[in-house]
Length: 380
Ligand code: GAL
Image: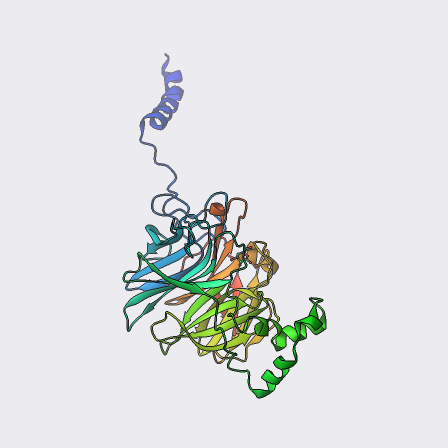
């Protein structure tokens, strides 16, 4: 081979050898440098995080992310509630099944039930981790409309299932005085068979569905938990056929309702509540009710958890802002300087492939704003 040809061939040969012989480092997809909403989010084993409709608890220097384990072809619970842990909110370790469904026939959380939107709060007094979730009994569609409660000594669990039930049977909301109760007295379901008419909406607002479920307990579906600065905790959930949100105060051990509750946006049809407090104001983001399909986020504020709650325009900005970027709210995390809006992009035909939206909430002119970002990192 002439020197001239060698001069051309050598570099190519070196490149070829390098490509063949050097160890191949795969694109490091297990260490995302940033949060990329809507993309696969691998844990430290390279597996897409499976913790949907979730919430986050910070305990010590660790964040725990609890969520629904979603199977590949059904939205029913085949596993239970998963727990992931992280120090920086970017890199997550699968810490296992926090609450497992059971194989006991007829059990409230029998495998195949619907177990959604789990949230965990820590009780400083009892030193227990308290989990609440939306529960639908196996084979009954969404008709049971219960909340479930479980408790653990450690953040990763195992959580012990305690009970499930509907909410606040035999109790009226705190704002129902003599006047409101005399209106409720006049409400007769026979007169409101046609739904979605102005008269029906007014009756729902006044307590038509509330009255129907008064004896047996109020429906409890999409939900979150909130611990206030004074240590009091609240369960916030879609009730009354998803037409009205309820905020129910929890007992000091965070394991029951006290019986004190208020209604938010009666007949407003809100789901997916997520809440945070900023400079003394309570802010709540919800969705409308279109099942797995995304819709426009709603924003509410109040100076008291007990209301009155005022509705504001959609806080989302950017592509698909009118559809919450293709997602549905699930939780809002306050972590040091960052407030994070968490939402789910559901994939009902392939539930385990559902994606996450995590975006910072910023304040502009005193109002929370959520701008789409292809990628970002929380400052902790
Ligand atoms: C959504 C709700 C989800 C799930 C779904 C079922 O509106 O937020 O948690 O219940 O409906 O269709």
